[in-house]
Image (cartoon, rainbow, N blue to C red):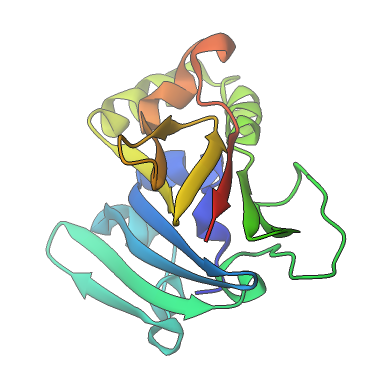
Length: 196
């Protein structure tokens, strides 16, 4: 699933009150699998004028709609570029452009770097904070919603997230309303070096 949703923009999370869970399995030097779901309130989905492009079935996704929610579940395997908006394959230059929604980069020697610039979500949040009434309303709507990212492989070499006991995965999870907190308490960039 070629998706910018892997690094959910703060404006989208706030305006749509989204809950999301992503797992990225690094399978090789230019192959990964992404699975998970994105769920949002149906009312917000319809107000945003969203359509089937929110959850394209030709990219391994399936959408379920109830009276209250719209849920997109996805499971797709492809190159780094296919599963991430800014994947960097073998032989390409590795960089950390924090204006992009994320990056997967082959480092050589069976190592891959996964970078999600979650800090930029807080920056977008600051721009929205100029309307206190809106922020108060959003705080109530976001209560209990969460976003979770997991990176898995043969071995996690290092991560800014929490590494599992068996050393094969790293995770970062946070409440959507954490984006409204003081800058020092907001989610940090999620960077993981993983061996496949």
